[in-house]
Amino acid sequence: MDTVRSPVSAAEPVLRRLGALRKLSADGAAALERAIRERILRAAAGEDLITEGDRPASVHMILSGWAYRYKTLQDGRRQIVNFALPGETCDAHLYLLSDMDHSIGALTPVVYAEIERGRFEELVASDRTVAEALWCETLVMNAIQREWAINLGRRDALERVAHLFCEVFERLRCVGLTEGTSCAFPVTQMDMADATGLSVVHLNRTLQELRAARLITLRERNLTINDLDGLRDAGLFNPNYLHLRQR
Image (cartoon, rainbow, N blue to C red; front, side):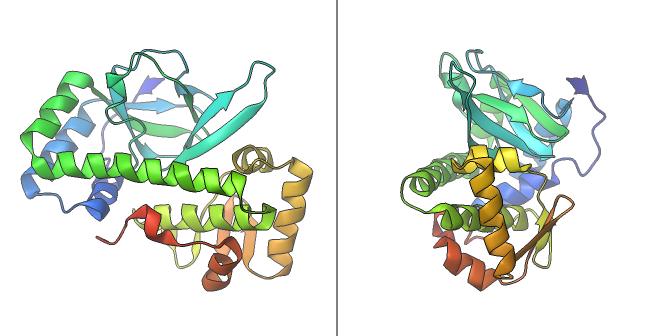
């Protein structure tokens, strides 16, 4: 992992993300930006930001690129349990636990901020709005995890994939990373299969169904939703669990 120079706008995705959950005070936003800019790192695609079994001692915030949470069984089978998108905090307060129970890997090249525990605790103690926004994000991530459990347990293949597209689009939209109804989607079919609990063959067939219904166009690592309401209906998608009403 390489240290990178901190551009002035590096913290913008995090400020937008947390600001969508709680209105940040001017002092809180400035303190958060300073903390983020103190230590910014880069991870290559395929590299772990933190690995299962490691002792967490800091907080990671994704500034650009996509990461993912995953578990691997002893026989090598992998389950992606969530994506970590620009602006999102991977593991706020996770340092309170003794070790990592899952890994966080870089799906694409990732730039992220690393805030050590003492600095993070100083930050949240100094401003109530920042503390509340970070707790809200932790609660929202728990809500997302519940929704992913419903995806695997109750939605059929087409509903799972449609729901995933809708969720990712909304999570990117709140940090300003969509254009109309298009957004980056740098996820391979193998990764999507591991995220939706489908075989690659079944996933491919499901994508063809969504394309045939003219709901999506997926080309060159870019997703265009041709019919947002139709895709939401297909995925039984209700965005209330994302709690982005502040936006």
